[in-house]
Length: 135
Image (cartoon, rainbow, N blue to C red; front, side):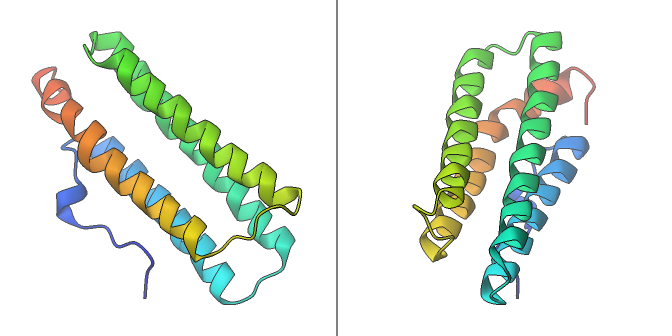
């Protein structure tokens, strides 16, 4: 059973970004599975790094298209991306320093920020990009 399942309501109407969101969900599910299976800290740390790296890649992909096409809410979206990236990097640092266990609370945070970001913030750009021929 997955920690997060992709559902059609998470679609933003842009195939590339939907695929990237699916990949983020897959990485969070992998982290959850490793946690459930009691994997060693170095494995959890590697998956956390993968999540951070892919999140940065995904955000950069969105931001590049937003600037290319003059998305009006770009500054707000960028601030949210920066906040979320900083938060996940901070969680990783606390974990690395031994100040944080990857627990269900951390996993819930990851699930909630991803779903909320997609459903609220990312959903807004779907029609904008579609209107510019990006599906």
